Length: 95
Image (cartoon, rainbow, N blue to C red):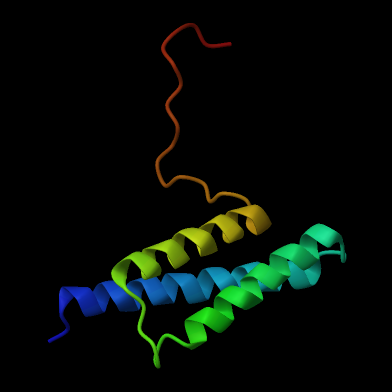
């Protein structure tokens, strides 16, 4: 049986890996610019840090911080993902 902590770690690592792969794929499609180089360097440095996790497992806080950093990078490259729920219009007359 997998413990909750292990599942959380595995789930976070999967999310991080997929988000980095998507961001790097998109960056490869963009014209080279200082901003693209900066974002690509960040993605590569995050990947390098994660590659060391089997030898030096991160703390829960370090894992969460990496997830936050990767998701911010992902949003900077691909834009924020749309919410699963539709946004509600404020009450009032419709135009």
